[in-house]
Image (cartoon, rainbow, N blue to C red; front, top):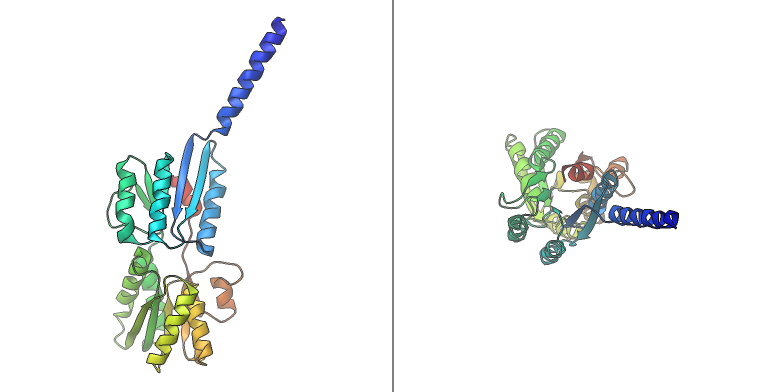
Length: 275
């Protein structure tokens, strides 16, 4: 009888232990601004890295480039009692008060890739967008031998990477008096708007020597518009991201669609390590 009693107690203890292992000690909410190949790579890296830590669960939500939706995602995570938030703000100004709200509640907040307009967050991790813009500016100036007309197709204008990539680019080309930025438009990080905006630029300008695209989805949209107009060989196209895989930046360079693409790391593993 005593044997069966101790067996029953042991089984109960095993059951309790199993339940405790299934219950995460730390819950992390990831509020992504967009749903695209660059974000998918980051998300995969975050989820893979989380597997190296016992008792950590990760939930990822994407706002699809919608400020209102991202605010709802962040409030959802707060209501759920997440232990830490990772946030890539769609646009800086609209998302600042929501990120600050989470921070004031005592939830650690890591902003990634895109910043907000205050210091009410725990940490930031991301590449130097100003430096990338400056490197692109120097590269294009070199390719054009210090003389030519450039058009710029930016990411979402209210996002900090778009602001910084433009500022760095302008700082670089300011050293070349015969390099001119003759037009600039917001392509919202996407191929469709880029094609529309580039088509308008081609109608306005008879001479374009280079297209500076803020990412490798914008760049092929601009290229397609130029190709439809029979002008793609008149100019070079430069993008940012340098992702491998079909239709991404590295393949576009190999296929001579892009003249160059600049590496912008996703850093998903480093984000989770910091978390």
